[in-house]
Length: 235
Image 1 (cartoon, rainbow, N blue to C red):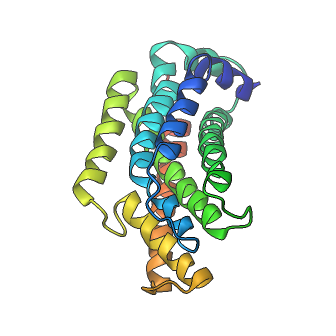
Image 2 (cartoon, rainbow, N blue to C red):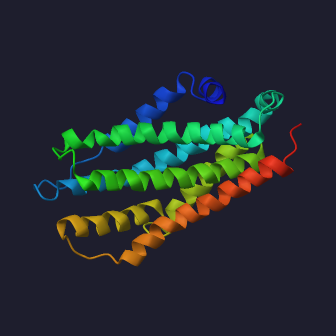
């Protein structure tokens, strides 16, 4: 019931259609830079910068609408008037939005396989999808926490978008702080493992690049759950 409620309230027309359109534009509307046979998979990285921007806008709008917007519209009060656990409500809203958003981007990204004439078993496609998934999780948990704290849809949208767009702009391609930097690091490591393309990337750096956003995401998710369950007052 909670998943259906979330789909009806947060993914009604034209939200899903706009997300799909944004994914198609950000992922597929990019130039093919590497033309040689062995380097075609490097074209998968050409769209990461614009994908990062679209993900920030998508997550900022969707999660702020789902959480902060539900307070201003009275939807959260209606939901919690039923015999439902707050943790179940939070989990349903969070997982529904996260899974749909990632499914859209992963599906569109997989279209690179025929468009770039790659093998369906090309590991770098799935490495890129894994990198996008980590970023979606990081942005989603951050947006959830901010939306619960702010409880105002418009302010939440602006806060999430400006915060993470600013972070990406300031950090550039820092290998730990920016999505573009983390993606290049992870992509380069697995490209070296599968193709022997240098420079070699240290395993420890890749572990940090993946664990940093995942650890912070886990922390923020626990904070959100504790705050929503035991501290937040629903007017």
